[in-house]
Image 1 (tube, rainbow, N blue to C red):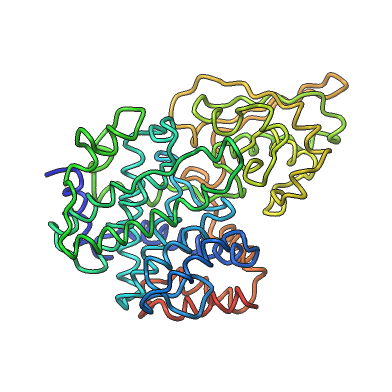
Image 2 (cartoon, rainbow, N blue to C red; image 1 turned 120 degrees about the horizontal axis):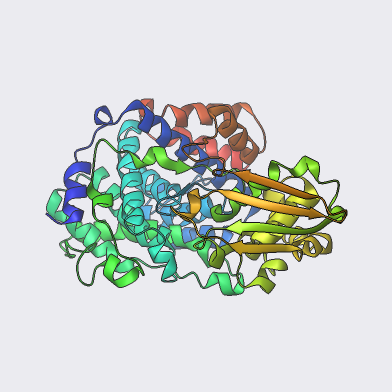
Length: 456
């Protein structure tokens, strides 16, 4: 069998009874995080373009996009939901594949789940399958898609969305294989936004989610796709990755190695690749008297991280847009020193334009350091030299939020309530329903609560 067929042979019949409690709990945590992020995105309007386009597409009344009361087509709802979950770049990241997993899993699971009136248990089982698909495909070639100038989230995300759709609609192996084969032709997502500070990255998960659903629908109508879409001579690994792929990462230990338990929940609304630097700085932040007392800062950076968050240096020092700042290690380090914290408001455009932060940012030196392992799970180190000659060193093994330093359920809930605008009765009920998704008869109550919180 091809790698696609192996994944589907395992995942199509997967039920919650096959999924360990730890993996089920992890999936619920990530779905909760994603829903909270969609609420803050709706409140701030960062993804209004996708929401408005999705509403304009309309279609049969199959699914509500997060925060709306009126149903539209499932592909259109998924287009908007992907942009909402990823809108402020505060969503989770799988370190091995460097993919934003929930931004492509939740939209397909929720939109298609509504369209077929699936139970919470069926939606959760499909989501677990989707998490495994997106993470495994991306981690087969660590940083390989990024090195080729492509966003791994969209490249791998079309497959998870197609797989979720195939599972929830009851497709057989042949049809589902065609679905993923078709989805592969939509794999892409250019990283050129790093050059100009544009917000196209925000659109990638929605595009992947929508195209995955469409691919599955096309397959159901008889369209065909290559079963070798992953490993074939013109498949995504050979055509789109700058690095060799290890297929055992895709199909190895299915049912015993659960990548859904290895996904990082972000504590900062910015690129995961610089979180470890911020965490290293946090360990010594109380030793820095003030921003004016800082003469220079050396940040030691993984070679795969530097092109994304440190280069080109002039743009990173003084970002032009909010998206620029979210991918600037020097500026984010400076903001942490000036403000003492990093929050969603840190990356508002007015905040990004502050001269005081830009002046400190100019004192940050990014030093590329040889390292083993993937960039998103690398150690962090900063050296802060004060104007009196004192040198302060902060070091940490890995960033907060990952599987080896996870956020507690309490910390996750605090993030969720913050994104909901506070710990209201509706937010508490929504959290309880999502964390116990397997017991929900459908997704209606969850979407009603999201709409109430968005319009509160």
